[in-house]
Image (cartoon, rainbow, N blue to C red):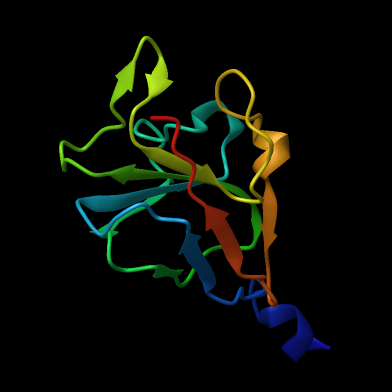
Length: 135
């Protein structure tokens, strides 16, 4: 009984999250990924201290996020073709590619956190993100 009480409970481990990028228009620039568990910081998680971000060359279509704590997350992706570290827009309309986890329908503005939320756990599924281009 003493041995059972003395050990601290270890949190469950999660498998690595694998993100596969589809429908990329070109290999120019960078793919910028933003993974957050905080609805208040979605889709732009710049000010989220717990967000996990990646920037990879656009030719890299598979990105891994190892060591994530289990929980619900949302992913936003941009194709920063000109490498200026942001999503370029014209009159609020994206001029570069964008995508989200679970590939929700896009209407006016970004989707809600609830539409893109997915669970990270021991058997985290691969997130296939289809890039979309308006211009």
